[in-house]
Image 1 (cartoon, rainbow, N blue to C red):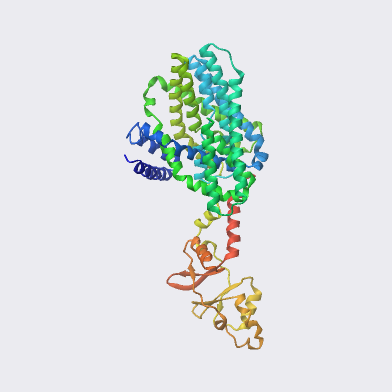
Image 2: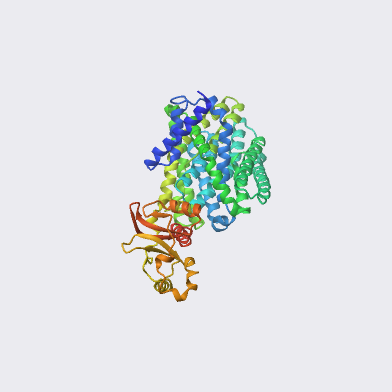
Length: 546
């Protein structure tokens, strides 16, 4: 099949699938994965192994953007405020999942090295699908902040645990000695290289953006920096999410004001890449693994140990660090998803242990299949669990912007209903009395039937006030300005803002409908902006204290 057609077809089906699952109140990432399974080698075979491999660069860019966006949330003040609970929960959920899976797998298989390997991999959490759910439901609050930090740091913890486990497992298989350098040194060295790479590129980008004023050019430089970071990570054989995440951390903390626009643009650009990433992730999953009875018990043990370990570990970590109640109660159920890091570590086991003889090859094959099956289940179950946690913590739809508020309102929701009408036959003296008694700057002028005929603003009265001796003779209709643009009360509020921006007006008269010129209210630009800001604060109120 033509590759461009396949890409377009995949994005289209992924979008449709996501929308269908959203209708069922299931996170859209599940829809992407299900579409991938349908299109993949397991069922329709539209995506095959060679085609999937050819999309590796695009998938890597998607992962890089996800890492960059995670970094945008990791501001220094977040760690100052939640640092203790973040680290306690991270160690609690990661270590307990590791220990529980290691013990259960060892009891089932009677092989400690398998338990150690699968336990280390179980400590990882999928940042991509987790962040996708947080973005989809515009989550904001202590739970969201802590969860974002945990999934960002989880990769590092998983690498360290895997370093220990891998060294122990190899020494058991080859009857060799335990190597401290290989168990601790290599993972720490990899993390250190990632920190240096991300921070180095990030600092260079920061210096460059200090001189760039054009938004489009700032976006292009930022995207280039992400891709350069990914290229460096691949060249140095590093996990690609970590350096990209550090890049995002540097930019969000050094240029916090300008960076918000950059992150917003990068996120929009990455949307089709996210769809491809999750669809191809689903296409890589082999549902045939579930048909092998011998694997079912091991898969069940792995999933139970991972899920229960993260649930209890996060709870205990929250209690120990005296985290906020909603964080302690609901964070654990948000940590079930696994994907890229777990698969990457499983692939590492498969390649490295296959060189250690028949038993090593068997161990690599077993670990790979268990993790693939675990990823398949956790990617289906994890996102709905995250949604449940966010709902219980009341953090869904909290990370709204002014654009979201405007999109959700009609003109009638925000227009000023308490206003003064001026009739055409009012004298200047009476008009001035109305102006003195009120606080408005703009006044609709109507005839005796209440039909709009014009408007008066304080600016329009400026010259007229100089003619004091004529004030008894001057009527409202003599000073009223024609109204060349009105808005209807049932129109979307965004239409009003488009008019304000396009026509450089600062007041709109609101009429009842297209067929009626009766005045229903007024919209003044500056009071309206203050009202939108107030609504935004109300939607976000109490989140940091809750």
